[in-house]
Image (cartoon, rainbow, N blue to C red; front, side, top):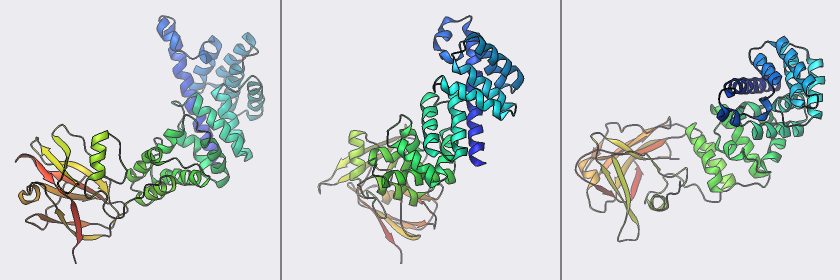
Length: 387
């Protein structure tokens, strides 16, 4: 039942593509430039009429127009697919199946044909065939099909994931988007995608740090810190630091130098026209962090997800020029929702601040800088539990 529901969603998405293309074709009568952009699938007048009728759920008109298209070009399987879609929409499943068998004999380039046989493969439990059809759809009409909706029936079972992983190992053009979870909406879908990517690593296809980083960041954005770290360890040899990462700014200094994205578990910048940020070499061979806020309000500079036990911590900075904390311009905020939260008022003194880490799955630590007073240079950050 679930598989049929997702497949029906896919068909509806492709009907929408057909309607869009039919509108473009009508405009193409007056504009050769638009005509040059049109896919060949929709150039036949009868094909257009059938597609338009399908989009309007006018099944009888769609079938009539598709039959006219078949008579004008019997070898064109696209018209047979439109006929099958119209019959399917009208509830005539057996006649639709015959039409789609004819469409398949004419070739597999038509997305409606692929979508129909994807649904049939799912119903038959033939996940290998279903994965081939899904792959073809994501290659042919990537903007018209929701990958999350299309692949969910495959990700819902061990056999389906096994077939899907076989496709992923072939490095299809949609793999990067799949790994980055660009189509995932909600924690449940993110959990399912994580399972698929963990099984991909277990199959021997480890993607490496740079390719898996977007997926780990997506999981962190969904508040799934434990899953993000699990996925990172499965695909990347670079360990995730326990507790606070990059307290001495060395990894951030490298990122600032070469422009790389950096680890999903390290410091993330908050771009702002008011904030200037640079790494400053120190006498001990380490780095200081030089900050400047030219704006009129406190602003977040950096954030990182941390895996620290809940409780109260005393925050201290080493400082290359002995400025920042003493003047109260640098503060740390904590949140559980993945957004940088303004620091709350709390105990603080000369060069230290007390922050409280709540008991949540993915606490985010953010560093804020108040304006005024020139630049600030920070040395190593320390978080010490308050007993």
